[in-house]
Length: 254
Image 1 (tube, rainbow, N blue to C red):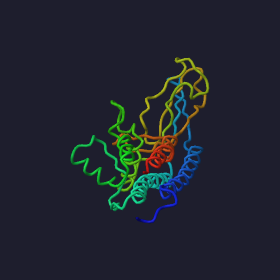
Image 2 (image 1 turned 180 degrees about the horizontal axis):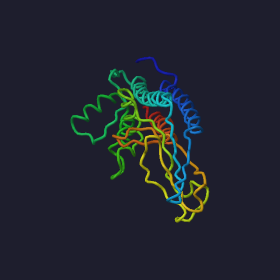
Image 3 (image 1 turned 60 degrees about the vertical axis):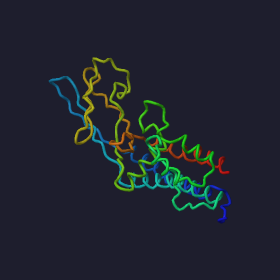
Image 4 (image 1 turned 120 degrees about the vertical axis):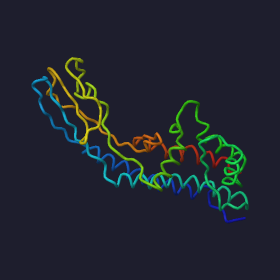
């Protein structure tokens, strides 16, 4: 038998602890950006009795993307190392091809052989659990992005080959941006089409000189794959791995 870890998932937990360090850094970077994410200028348009507010939106520093990539890599690696550790602690089976499998489509004979090769040596209950959380088991009608396992796997895969999308966005323009519940006749908004500098907001009537209140958030993801996650949703991937998957695997070690 190979030498055993002090605890079956020690290596995986070390990886998640390092992921938590990256997550703390990521939250700090996003917070610092949000505190200075945009400027607003105004121009009165007398002929229309309105003021146009131009929101010049900055974009996060490249370090935000890099930290996020490191965070995702640690979490994804933790899953792979968990499978490797459980196999090594349970059996002498060859674990060189071990991996935490992620499949978008229900298993058919060819993909099932690939799945079985990745988990060969795990306990039957651990294998059943891994199958139960596969993206193809998401509730009917929901997109793949509803699966945290798929989001983690896909973002990490993309980050290995090209950069994931990280960009700033403002909250939807409504009358509440001006700090009051204004009558509809006193406020109008320009369609939320992104300009080359950010967005335009328009205020008409008695409240046209109120400075709009803008909230900014950072979106992580991959538009082509339908992944759009804010910092809280990115953080939930950590909880998914540490509080759900690793605990479930540890309970099914034998």
